[in-house]
Length: 285
Image 1: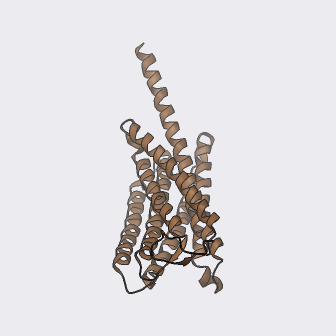
Image 2 (image 1 turned 90 degrees about the vertical axis):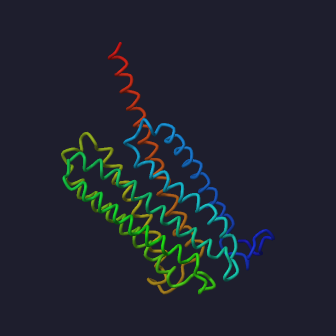
Image 3 (image 1 turned 180 degrees about the vertical axis):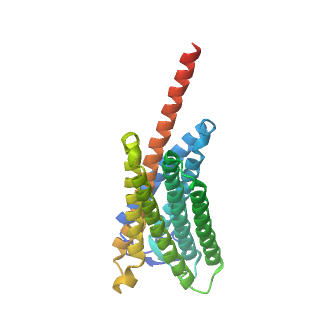
């Protein structure tokens, strides 16, 4: 716990009762994820002209990087409590909102890649309908969250920054994340039932989709319970437990999972491309 304000922390009012070890773990973890994100992003950019059909994965990388880039300073700024009506108060709230929005979009973009694969196997005629549905859902949530971020940037009516609009936005984002992951899991379950005949040759793909969907759902559920803990139990959760279950777990686990799966997909595509090139070379020789 930081008991006093460091001299270099402007607008600091007092230390925060989050332990320094927890904040350090958060910062280090996010920095590691950031390095992984940037490395994969650069690698993908170098080879993107050869992997045109993987542009959806480019969007995933961008969303994940945005989430991690803004989460690192958020952890760092939470060392102390700031004075009311000060720029850091608004900055912390806006950083949190941007992170939650970027993480939601990363999850949405990622799960859409799996749904497209499964839909292609069955040659569903409703594929375009699902694309429009996801695009509309992502657009609505993005617009609403951006409006709330802009409003928060110019709102000076609430000294602490935690206005009714902000709390409503937090609850809305938590519900959207949870309902979206449940939707992905439900749709995936229905599709898996329809893909029983394909299980013999794409079992790993199907199993991976189920595992990832469960991880995303449980992570979103963790954040949902924390944000609504006061409403459910009429008392506040312990601060350190809240920090772990509401921010560290719902950010670190889904992002790590997505990055691992992106690495697997990217490696598989590169291997497939090299095999095709070898076959073409052997044909001409």
